[in-house]
Length: 617
Image (tube, rainbow, N blue to C red):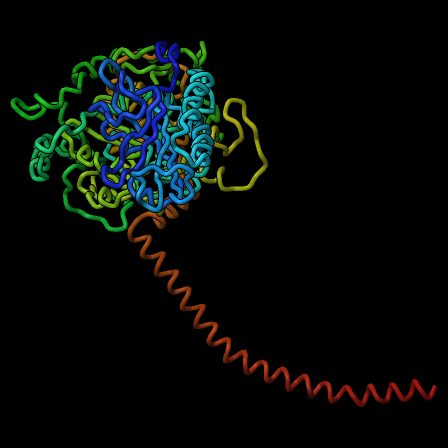
């Protein structure tokens, strides 16, 4: 990180256009991507061969403008992920002042993108959007001086200090995420902790990438320091390297021979199943088992040659877990009913970062961020169709990816969970994974607590360190507390009892993930200041029954059917009531008019007599 701070954060300014014969291609780069080449060179390094398809997204012609966040693998000699932000626009060719010969279509489609060393997506997008607009308003794409000025300006104005403030979350609204997904946000949170294969799907790309990155922003330190190794993959070099789908499937099934039930002792108390799919498929999918085969590799198996990313042996984890010195055994005060609303602070401040001995990431004194996006677990905010092979790549153990092409969504067997952002629905077809994501009573309290504070209109309460109660910073502080409490509970001698509030099946699966084993292998003295136990642990109450019932009605298949039946019945009753009301109402109207005329006839003589008597007087 020190070397990145000394150098400018922006690597290149790139313009990508659509050629009617060549397709998407790089038209300009400053400084040149290939050293010694010209600014207008179309040549790209092999590692960045997908750059044009990421910067100019699939289906871009359906939108006047769009924004893309994407990750590129490091080039030779670099070890960190390259973060890309692209602003796309299209305009009619007839309005151009200078129309080049290769512009043969009625519209011109181009993207201006910034390749950066730092994940300052929102800040870069805000500046880039203005420059892209000005670049198109020139109506002469040969005027590149504004792009060179953008490069110099960003390198002067952006620095590593922006990673420490709230500016890094610009454009990532945790409030909107809670309002849209409600308690399902916690399910997404747990899916990533389990390092599953998660695919987000929605159009346009801007909404897709902002939703995905907002979910990641709930993890303490992930965006700031946890994505450095999130794009380490090898692009497909030629067609000869393509694997047929049958070969890929057989390889995956061989490497994932140990099913989830073989390694997790799921409690029989969890008889209910969390149904997040509208169309549950009970058949065993290809890639829905946990990546836990590395615990006991079989001799001569595919793991010995291909899956070398795992560096921790089981006995190391067991020894380190037994050596952890526990000095803080206070229990959470459940009588108050309110969790801590500020993020934990170490004695020396959270600004103290050091390089993790195992993860290699910049970690704080709590060992955060967790090493989720390392050793073959990818983060791709937007995935181009040309990268589809990565979903079945045997060297990729998992991913959090976003896609807009329907082909990704149709390949359900390649993902553990498909998140339909538009409908706020999570499709999971593995029943064992559903059990792991079954929210406990304490989890439902936590989710309900967040939803109520975000949705209810109440007086604004400002809290030091977390901002307005129910705001973006406050929501991230709650998830920060959730992670700290989970990690602290895992260190206690009675950890099984404390972790039960997070879900027995979930914690059993989480303990064999790469991020947990890396974290538990090191000592984190600052964790002694964190109160163990779920922030919302406590005795059951009538309110818990209501929350559970509401949760089941909204998400289980039976609950949805029952709710739809109630709604259809209510509509029928209303329609029948209207019909009956019209017939009965017609008779009542006739009766009222008859009575009114009768009373008026009786009242007329009285009025006449009173009037004549007044005139006589």
